[in-house]
Length: 451
Image (cartoon, rainbow, N blue to C red):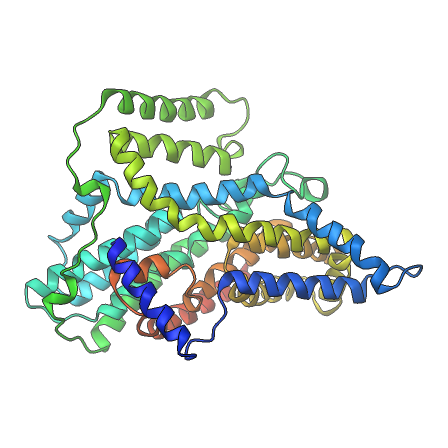
């Protein structure tokens, strides 16, 4: 897989050198947003007794203060992606995917299965769903091609990406999990909001249920409607080589250690004096995923080798999250957050605010392709505006989550692991994923209007 990703990276680099590929990188977008926020703060929030030049050092101080406020959050998000990716490389995940091959004999069955499984797993963990879907797509594509069955491989790739359209309302959702954590950066404003009011709310459970029913059926219909074709067997010759394919004997120490962590997590929930849902936050989930990863790998050598591959995907988080935290710091300490919140409140009603929040979150996600980074920047604004209008905070948080996850379907940043594993190109996948986005938009809008 590393060779395939390297090959695709070299092709993209050659295109950039020719001047054809002009879309800025996510890091460049984060830097431009930083400059834009600094500019707005200097122009719109300068105190009466200062001018722009004398106020600039103070604004830069706000930025520096914000950079270091979310370091723990950055690490939490890097872990939730890396550990999810790592679980997709375990022998158990490998056996699960091989088991699916027995039931997927046609293109339509494969597209439907990939979509349904990816979304269900994506609800549990977005990193696991993303990588598992990509590996499943490649395996099924190879399996059907060897059997001489025509397939729509780009549609299969888009189906493998649909887990990113459900993740923020699931067990790895940045916003709902962060506000459920004691000591989160908005606790003084909104307190602690348990996942019973967000992830396990009746609105979100209805949303998840409808999405899991409608979107896979839509994928099945698209597979029947759109043409399939034979793919050369040579396309799949460079198969993904992950740690689980190597031979490792079971290591008792690794099994005992992983089991100890998992059992301690269960006991933590069992013995807690508070409700179970109040104990589930980012720290709990990451600790459980870590123990489960060690247990399922069964050998520290295999674990380290898989972790080396998995945690390469977290580079963007570790570099970009401090920049988004700096943007949050400028907006928070300069007063920009209050100004934007007042404008949102001025044009919104209790009925329209969740809808505006969904669309604004979808737009911001195109520029800030990170649920955690977006929550750091946009979350305080949404919270302030919701309180001014009198809109339920839990519903507002989930509206932001829905908007963020929705436009992942046209934001190729998180699709890079998928493209690397499957060998597909973004331009092949995005037309299909765009149709999935339209279906999701219809569902989310209806749910927000009803509840």
